[in-house]
Structure formats: structure tokens, C-alpha cells
Image (cartoon, rainbow, N blue to C red; front, top):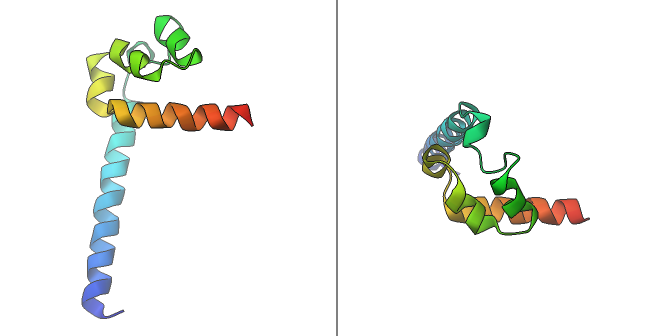
Length: 84
């Protein structure tokens, strides 16, 4: 790998890491009542596999941090892990 390609790879890695960290910190700053997995209606939707509906019922803060598609993918991945 030449030095320019290596520099691009390092910059890309740093940018991606920064974006992921920012997203994680954004979620960490939310109050529990803003999360769709809280105990209540949102949790019942998740427990019954209605992931898209649980996102629909979530707060605007949560929706601005996590897309519906990412939420559904995360829930499905967790359900698969829990089932095994």
C-alpha cells in the first residue's frame, strides 16, 4: 500500500470513529423515558416484535439519533441473539 492510500485509510478511519462516537454519546445523553425500550407501551411493542411501531412511538430525541431502519436492524439482531 502506498503512503497516499495509507493516509486516506487513516483519515477515513478517524472520521468514521468520530461519527460513531458522536452517535453513541448522543444516545448516552438521553433520559430513559426518551428511549423506545423503556418499560411501557414501547417495550411491549419491542417484546412483541413490532420494532417499526416502537420507533414510531419513540420520542423525537430518539428518532433524531437513530433511524427507523437502524432501530429495526438492531432489534432483530438482539432478538436473534436472545433466541439462541
